[in-house]
Length: 253
Image (cartoon, rainbow, N blue to C red):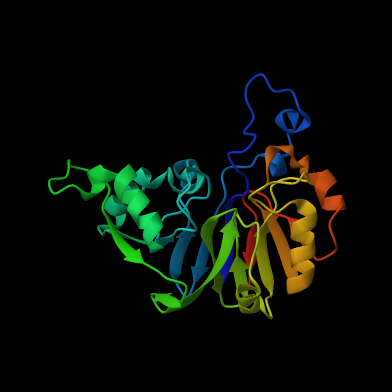
């Protein structure tokens, strides 16, 4: 399995031109964080998790030439706003793009992208097929995927386990029953927005404790807010097997 971090950031605290903080002034590529998304490649199948506002840039930067499906964690715009650009893959692959998400996500997509689902579609509009998923395992081209339900304050969000790797973003709490699905992981990817308490995201300390409880061989922190600080400084605070992910990082499993 190959996992590519296309984006490890969040819309919270996106730098503005007038900002002069250390992250905005940093020239370290590890501090340049697009909205969170990953590409998973397994057995020749390419699965994207989330199409945020930076989707087009992420595809171009990482030279992604093929997608078999898109998985959605939840319906917030920083995870769905780039869907229109899926049409480039429609043209290249000559196929509708399969989208997978819980019913609330699919309903949101149908509202926000109503023109994609119109009875008479405008020529060149992106073409997708909707596949509802529930909190039970399913397959894409023979690749087994197990949803992990977490809570983003009061909003249910899906993380996903594929083999010995699990990807979770926008989590604040995870029930004991869902934590059991994370046993014996080689790699856990988990969100940590910032160091200060937050109503709907894990803090850095909370993420480190969660990782210790799950006890994967390696863990990577994503969905990092602008106010977390410089990559090199945060990395020094982490346990030996925990890493602050960065855009472009590639893992092989």
